[in-house]
Amino acid sequence: MDGTLVHSTSDKLDRYDLRLDPKENNNLGSIYVKFRPHTKEFLAEISKYYEVIIFTAAEVMLHK
Image 1 (tube, rainbow, N blue to C red):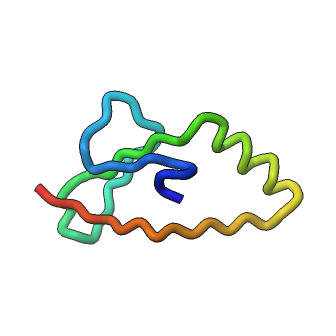
Image 2 (cartoon, rainbow, N blue to C red):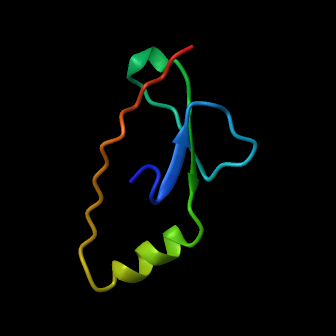
Image 3 (tube, helix red, strand yellow):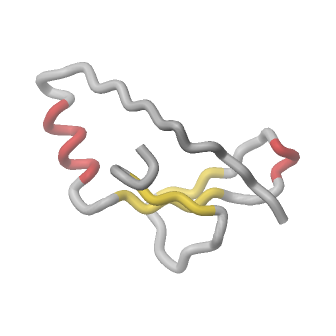
């Protein structure tokens, strides 16, 4: 999913669509996420016809 539908980073972005503050890893930092153009609209439309299950191989690694 990461790199295809979204771009996520622990580097603070000026503009982002979603910020995650995970409780694990002793809250070492936030994850900033930007959705690719039209991702939300695409998923909303296809979910009318299909059960959508999204997997990712991305690893969450927060560091300071």
